[in-house]
Length: 282
Image (cartoon, rainbow, N blue to C red; front, side, top):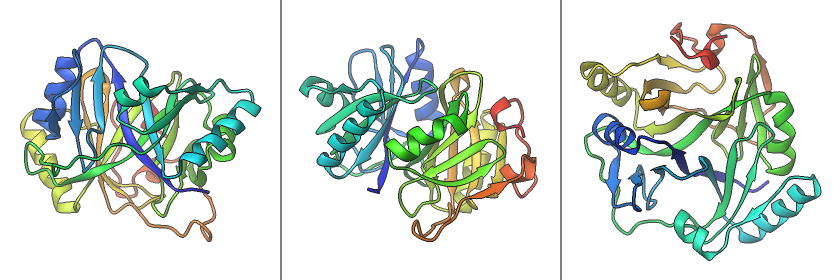
């Protein structure tokens, strides 16, 4: 298995301005010049990691280091009956990658599998002292995580790390998980995980957001499976920004998937309870 990380998130919206204001003014991501009608943001050394656009589809970019690995995945996907779109030069330029293919998982989530996401020669400079280290992972809605698991594991090469009820955690490197699949009645991006320096920065962000009357539907808390400390903030169209730290490191060769009970303490061992987010209520 070749390790991969989350390169970017593209979110289609009819209200780019509202999302841009929240991502910049509330979360404190660095705004950078974008395409016409779009809003681009950075969270680390990469040229951009979050894009709001009026043109679809929404997608998650997953970066592999080896371009030949993309060809192997494309072959496996096609042999399994999945439709694969190969990005031409113009499409790669729009995504700021060297090479890429696009596929949808069985629930309908669009995935851009890419190689060579562009880095910036200018260091990441957030709009405020938020302690953000980078884009760490995403939570996706899934009609059936168990049905979708073979797509992610057998075709894309992710490891099953743990389950909590029907929630599935998937990883490719030593980080506990990069992708989480949550049972839902529709596909889409549920949450975007941004790593922050430590618990102190989680709490500083909490008070910053609370003072500005941002809804915080879950946390601060600690995830049972991964040990991840988290704080979720709700943006426009109920997009969740998850500020996280202390996500566990695992040995991929030795880790064995565990089954956590369908119990609220499996999502937060500290006792925090999600409010108003159906996918986070066990």
